[in-house]
Structure formats: structure tokens, C-alpha cells
Image (cartoon, rainbow, N blue to C red):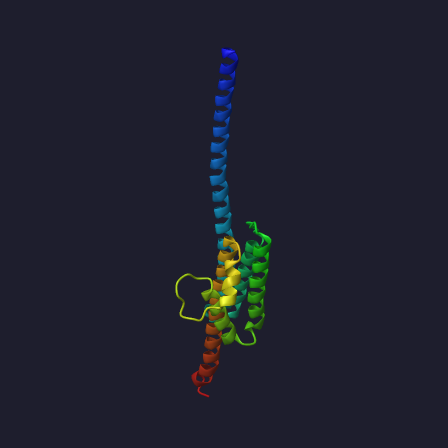
Length: 198
């Protein structure tokens, strides 16, 4: 009887050891999974950044101030880089509950509507984007906060909140760049006749 209880006791220790080792392995795997997700997310952001830089170069003032031949050659290179960058697909999925899905869908819809209206009234669109962006930041912004949009963003998964904020920041940068380009082009038109003595 003592031998039987001793073997049971030894098996229990062995099971506890195995369970501990399995738990330790799972903990290590969890760290690796988080590292993988962080790396993939950084790659997504890098891809977005590269695409934005290429687009900015293609539409920038410097591109207008070079000869047609150089512009064509640089545009072809930019298009090639754009195509190669777009061929890189990195996707980090986000696990969401139904409420988070609904909040993300509504928040995305609001942003998409503003983007559609940007060409019609860039200044009003920029101000609206600023109000949405203000809803995504923790520090007190110098613009009014869209409280309804803020409630939607808070209802989203944390990863989606970060993506929404990044998208709004990119849209604001692009809007500002577009406004600067329009102003430069308008000033160039005004300056050209004087330069020619007309």
C-alpha cells in the first residue's frame, strides 16, 4: 500500500512538472507571438509610410521644377517603386467582438465620407479631420473634439484605435501637402507673367 501511494505521489509530481514545463513553453510562445505581431504591425506602418513618401515625391514641388525628360524618368521610377511596395502584403488581424466590429465600421464610414468631400471643400474637410483626430489623442488638442466619433473610437479594439489615429494623421498630412501644392501652383501662375514682363 505504501508502494502504491508512493507511485501515485511520484506520478503527480511528474504531471506537475510536465504541466509546469508546458506552461513555461506556452509563456515563451506568447512572447514570440506578440513579437511577431509587433514586427508585422511595424511592417504595415513602414509600407504605409513608403507609399505616402512616394506619392509625396510624385506630387511635390521639386518634381515640377525639373525638365520634362527628368520628370518622366523619375515618375517611371516612382511608379515602379509604388508597384513593388503595393505588392508587399502584410496583414495583422484583430480579434473583435460584435460591438467593436460595429464601432469600427461606423468610424471608418465617417472618415470615408469626409475623404469623399475633401475635393469639394478642402478647408472644411481638413477641419473635420482635425476634429476626428482630436478625438483620438489624449493630450488636449487646440481644436474641438468630435464627441460622437470619440465614443465610436473608444468602442473599437485597441489595435483599431491606433490604425484609425494613423489614418487620420496621414489624411491630415496629405491634405496639408495638397493645400501647400495648390498655393505654390497658384503663386507660380501669378509670378510667371511678371517674370516675363507681361
